[in-house]
Amino acid sequence: MATRQTGDVVLDVHGISLSFGGVKALSDVTFDVKEHEIRAIIGPNGAGKSSMLNCINGVYQPQQGSISLRGRTFHQMNSRQVAEMGVARTFQSLALFKGMSVLDNLMTGRNLKMRTNLLQQAIRWGAAEREETAQRIVVERIIDFLEIQPYRKTPVGRLPYGLQKRVDLGRALAMEPQVLLLDEPMAGMNVEEKQDMSRFILDVNDEFGTTIVLIEHDMGVVMDISDRIVVLDYGKKIGDGAPDEVRSNPEVISAYLGTVH
Image (cartoon, rainbow, N blue to C red; front, side, top):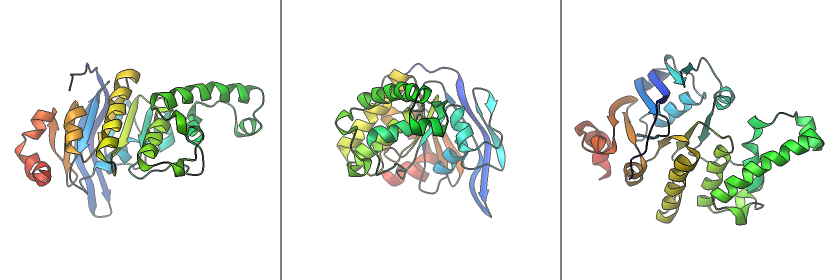
């Protein structure tokens, strides 16, 4: 993997602890993400990976710790407010509108960019029509970028799973995020689909300059495309560093990598 030029810290996660009743999902987890970086979060099932993403994008409110984006700290923010700050998210289980076309699904990702109200959008007249035309141009570029032009008017529910995951990525990209959170973007994919998705993730990072935080179980993919990796086990951080450092960390091998290889 070619070394990417990363910048200053864009996302700072400090001392995050999250509990559900008496169950600790995360315990004093600290790490940062640098601008233009691909940062992976790995660990066994139940390690707290998705809980961490849910804290970052406002789905969960941690009991302790802080999360800052470009020096601005999240204080009791919901998902929409975090999205408005520039954080987009894909989910492990697809949450697409299956009866809507690929184009219309991606247009929903432009909702935060809309300035006209729902009534104006419904009648598509004047400013609303001009705004929709402008937003559609952005979406069409993403469709071209993700090579899904032949399916732009196809209902998403009719597409193969791998293409649906690509549409999910496209909808997140339509938000023009500074930080993109990917929750197992290659889960359930075959080898060819994983190769395609890996290529698109690298291209998003390279061409759009998007900073990416990635949860993924395929260690080959993680080691190939990540700049740095943070490792969780039972809600605690047990490793953090470049792929080679993590690969050779005895605690990580014992907790996770050894069970895979």
